[in-house]
Structure formats: C-alpha cells, structure tokens
Image (cartoon, rainbow, N blue to C red; front, side):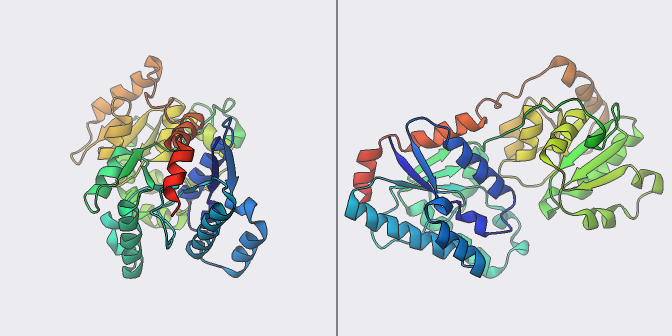
Length: 362
C-alpha cells in the first residue's frame, strides 16, 4: 500500500478554472482505489490551509513549506508518502530530486500566446517547467500533443507519461424546461469560457454559414464572457443576433442536458492541451465540430468533424451531422478517460513504492 499527499493547494488560486475542476475530480477518483491512501493537503493541514486562504498566502510558498516538512517527517519517522502536484510546480527542496513526486503539466498556452502573459509570469513558468524537466519526478502530460509542445521548448523529461484528463459525463434525464432549450430545437453548444484562443469569432462565422444553410437554428454558449460575446455579435443582422444565446454559468445537470440535446458541440480553438468540454460531449455521443489542430486529431480523429483553415465544406458537415447519431459511433478514448481508469494510471506510476521512496531520501 502506498500513501499519497495530494496538493489541492491549487484551491488557493481563484483563477485556476478548468485545472481546478480536473484536480478535484482526480482527487475524488484516486480516493476510490483499494489499497492506497490518498490524503488532501487541505485536510492534512486544515488550520494552515484556512490561514493561507484568509491572508492570501501564495500556494507556491505553502507547497514548498509542506513538501519540505513532510520530507523531514519521513526521515524522522520512516513514513512513506508520495506527493502529487496537479499543476506544473515542483517545490524547491534542498535535498533529493523529487523522485517521490508526480507533477502534471497541462499545456504551454503561454508559449503560443505570450502577449496574454506578463514577462514575470513567462519567466516564472519557464523556470518552473525547466526544473520539472530536469527533475526525477514523474512528469505527466494530459495529451501526447501537450508533451510534444513541451519538448519543443524544454529538455525531454526523465520520467514522462501521458495520462488523459479524467472525464465525468453521465447521461441526464430527457431535456425539459430546466435545460433552457426546447425539445426539438437544433442548436450548437459551445460550453467554455471566453479566452482569445477559443476563437469565438471563428465559431460565430461558421454558425452563421450553418444557419443560412439550414443545418442549425441556434448557437448556445455557456461560461464566462457574455460581455465579450455581446460585443462580437453587435454588428450581426438582428435576426441572426437573436439566435445566439449566451447562458452564462449553468449547473452541471443543465450542462449535461444541453450537451445531450445539441445538434453538435462546437469548438474552433486555435490551441488546446486536451479540450475537456469536447471530451465530455464525446462521452455522451454528441457530434463534434472541432478545429483541425494536433490535439483534436489525436483525441477525436475518426469521431469529430475537423474544420481546417480553408472554408468548411457544409455539404460534408451536413452528411456528418445526419449520420453520426444514427450510426452510434463511439468515442474510442471514452474508457481510457473514465475517472477510474485515469486514477489507476496515476497510482501505477509509483507501484514500486518502497524502492522508489528509498531512492528519494538523501
């Protein structure tokens, strides 16, 4: 049996967004495993965690303090414990090379969009990721594409693994009034927050063409960014503008219903490390209309309709939408992305617990 300290200190970062959701789901899933003990840092040190949240203490400093405390504790008591860091940062430690650690690298968005990150943030990320590459920790990438992005900028990691994000999507009851979309409506669902790389302008342009071709009637958008979307659609024809509905933040049940009733899920992002929303929709059997970028080809090739830089072939898209559901085409990675399967992959990384931990101690 192995013990793990899961650093859910990412909760101290209010802007963590989707990474925090993935972290929470992974923690819950790992705790369901038999024979291993998974402890959250916030539960192991509740008073310290509460104080850090109250005074706005940096999660990076807190992780460094806790990590070194537990290394000293292991030396004094012989307690065996591995550390899992769910978002790129490995704490500084005066001894060892993090052989007792797992760190997850989600993506390198700041390399593709440096203009949206301060110089200080870019330097910090470069330093942190280079340290991870040179460490002896298990570095987990959420897709092969994400790992390839990493290796274009940093040394190849000694212990690298690709483990997809856990995807939790349970079929909801039949759509009803609570879902906000009438039964029988033909709509595209774009379930993600507004960020520049999400390419909302491309989504609006393709929706406009699809509506004029009679393929769909509405575009439903969820998440943050209502003001930005309103600004973008302000110049459209009023009739078309009325068919774009920004629903804001919706409940999980409502989101699942919106997925299930949609003609297709649409995401024309120019960059992704994984695209969790698309994976949720695919798990439910929803057709996908996605940009033709590496990670979409990796994860959804053969399932999704991929849209390249050239004008989308609406006839081909129409045939895809007409046949997808009737063919009941499964997403081939659905099983690999179940929370249970993903948690098992993480726990297997340290299956040689005693030997690996002995090497980790100075």
